Image 1 (tube, chains in turn orange, blue, purple, cyan):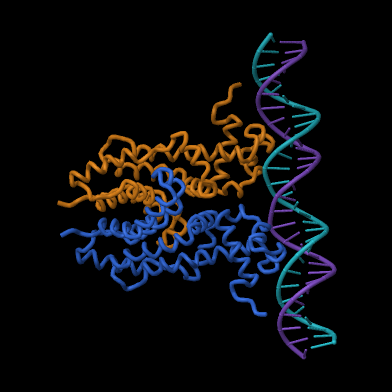
Image 2: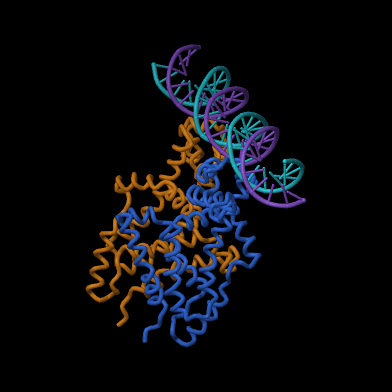
Length: 205
Length: 205
DNA sequence: ACATTTGTTAACCAAATGGTTAAACTTTAT
DNA sequence: ATAAAGTTTAACCATTTGGTTAACAAATGT
């Protein structure tokens, strides 16, 4: 009997490991807990992934792999700037709503061990700013947008999209939002962020 | 012989615990490591703070206590909006430059255990948005700024100020910045963020 | 049919870890 | 001077944890 991809053991482990690692981090997660979550014997974790570190690396690499392409889309496509800015929030927020633990997980572990990135950077899996930079320069000389560095604009776009998911516990309390209120706030940001940014950089006639 | 506050044992422990916990988190930190960092015997940690959890709580409470007042300043002072926005970045970035691990630490642990916040919220240590909300409404009816909710503006201000410190490892790679380059980028943001926000919300004549 | 490889489990192990204890040393009070 | 209280340490302990082993079961190939 052939097992479907969803129910084969290796995949069950990976999915379980994702859930546990993303919520508790490398050190907070227990191998036994992951085995229980996957509904299998603990020894199987080692049979398939050899060690906790390697299992973690598999989960982490996959997590980064999910976040990177959407950034690449912003930086290296030929669409008009306004279109790209308007669509990245829509995309990113929809995506992060489905994976709310991801930003915390990725950035926490990245800070703990920036080595992960160096590896990926060398594999050139990570996009650069050159494309966006050219696009901005063009718009600036045309007088369409104010002078702004690609670096700072990029940092702003990422900040506005990602931080609300990382800061959610604090933001919920300060804005006195219920879970539904906060979800509505986030939903609103799909268009609000782009308007905010375009307002900030557009030169008014 | 009277010991100064800086060199008494309890304080040495707290300072050491801060350094270790902020870099490695609750589960990543080892009591022995904290003892070594403080230059004392491990049993002393328990003598002064009873358990790892309580020591952690002391460090964490202090960390939140450092970040909250500056937010309060933004939300509940009578200064003009533009002045407040221009000064919070200056203040916050200067502060975070001195405590670069703080945002990661605080938000990671807050996501792991939001209970901490509930406790502080009940103590009314956390500022609310009412003051800012009134100030915005006033400016909106005067036609000075575009209609914008206090919640969204607040989220944006915090995002733009705090995220760069959380996302630093990724941002450094994508922007291809050396440590000095990145520090310069951050420094630039002390004024850049305020300009960006004021541009975004000001109504041009 | 049967041997070989692959997958799975229960039991086990050594190291690490948070925490305790009892004794020694210091400071303070009388 | 000396007792009491506070501080510090080395040695110890129970538990948890990542990882291993050896035996068993299920597929797979011939």
